[in-house]
Amino acid sequence: MPRPPAPKAKAAPTVSGPPIGLIGVVAALLVVIVAMLVYLMSRTESLQASGGENSLPEGGGLVLNPEVADDVPAVHIYEDFQCPFCGQLEAASGEAITSAATAGDIKLTYTFMSFLDGNLRNDSSSRAANAAVCSADADQLSGFVTSLFARQPVEEGVGYEDQTFFDAAREAGIEGDALDTFTACVESNKYSAYVSDMQERSTRDEVTSSPVVTIDGEPISNEALTALLQDPTSFQDLIASQQ
Image (cartoon, rainbow, N blue to C red; front, side, top):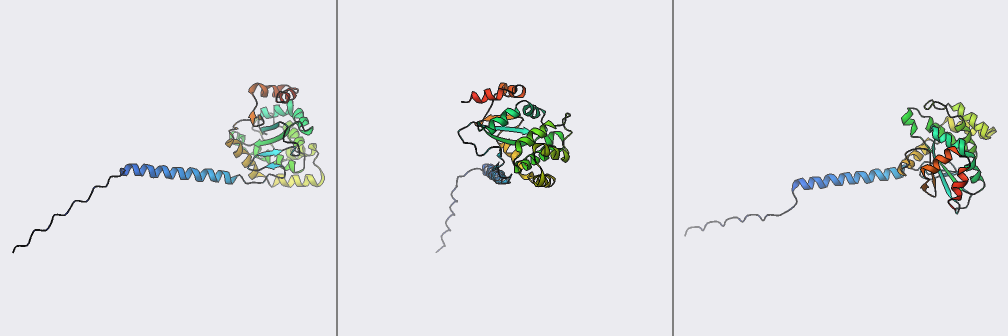
C-alpha cells in the first residue's frame, strides 16, 4: 500500500510589531533622556563646595547678616567685581544698602559672579570673588566689597593683582592674625570651588548679567535699578515701597 504524502507544513503566523526604524528612534530617545537625567543630577551634586560660615549651600551666596529676622525684605545682590555698573551701584547705593542691613531692616545676600573672566580672558572676577569670601571669614565682607570696588580698574579687563586684595582688606579693617589668614586664603585660592558654584547657581537661576538686585526673590525693575546706580537715597524709597 503506497505511503501517504507528508502533510504540508503550516506557515508561521505573522506577528505584528513596530517597524525596526521606530524601535531605533525610541532607543535613541531613551539614551538622550537618560543622559540628560545624569547630567542634571551631576549638576546638582556638583554644588557641594563650602564657602565659609555664612555661605548658603549650593552656591547660594554669602549672607551679610544671618542673625536678622526672616520677616524683613530679603535683598539679594548679584555682582561681578570686573563689572563697571556693579562698581557704580556700590559707589552710589552701597552705603545705604549696608546701613539697612546693619540696622536689621533687610536681610542682605551677595552672590559674586565670575562670568566676565571668559569675556575678558582673565581670572580676576574669580580671584576677587574668592577674596571676598575670605573677607567674610574675617567678618569684614561689606567693608571689603566697598573697598575693592573703589579700587576697580578704570579700564575694563585690566584685572586685579593680589596686592589690591590685601590693600582692600587692610582698609576694611582686617589686621593681625586675621590678615595673615586672609592672605593665605587669597594665595591658596581657598574658595575657588565655591566661586564656581556661585556662578553655576546664578546661571541656573537665569541671572546672566550684572548687577542684578532681587527683593524676596523678584528682580527689581530696570527703572529701580537705574535709580540705585544714580541716587544714594533711592534704596530707602525702594524698601519702603515693599512694606
